[in-house]
Amino acid sequence: GKASSVLDIGTGTGLLAGMFADHARASGRDIKIAGADLSLPMLRQSRDKKSANLLVQSDAAEGHLPFLDKKFDVVAACGVLDFIGSLDNLATEMARVAGSNGLVAVTYLPAAEGRGRVRKASLSPMYKYSPDYVAKAFAAAGIEPVCAETFTAYAQLLPVKYGIFIGRTPAAP
Image (cartoon, rainbow, N blue to C red; front, side):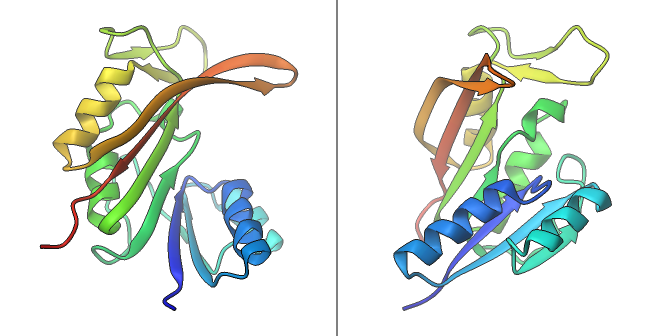
């Protein structure tokens, strides 16, 4: 059958891309993985791990992703929204490059419902978003929600609350 295709936005060192590749190998599926990141040093680390078929330098927050329309079955951005002040461009670009009935997934640091976007009070430019703000941003880009939840992960043994939004682009007519 046709190979699945995945775009990992903010691929960094290739952790998520590597997980997709490992899963595909374990299940005997053919998968094409592309990774995009703003940081060249991160892309070099990802390249060394050979977790993606294609790596490109790109600013997903502000710019145009250098991929064709409707190119990918899955478009993911994990740990990226924390650094983006506005979701509008990212949601629009994710919707553009996701294929018909494609999955779009993002993780984010959740703010309280009704708070919208909140900049964390720290030296690093990190943002939190309320789940309703995330859902509305992706709905405005034409992405229908499939799953929206919060969960706890652990960073350096400390619990960190995250949100996940998974949506689907419209099926072809």
